[in-house]
Image (cartoon, rainbow, N blue to C red):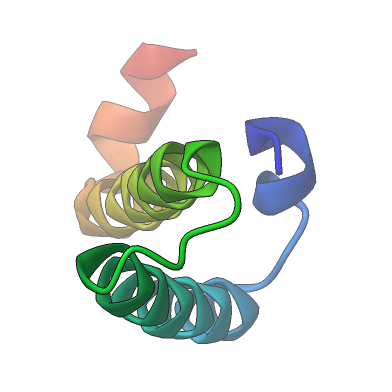
Length: 75
């Protein structure tokens, strides 16, 4: 997924996707341990998707913590 698509989701949807991606990543790591991994690039893709989601969630958290005066100065 790209960041543009992720930004359109609600916070609850992002948290759900993050949990799903973490479960998928865990399963893939287990498959890798027993040498049954079909697509090793999927590990990288999942890690990056999780990082994108966490970045967007963090941005939203910091935006909520800004005071109204700080938000006006950011323009």
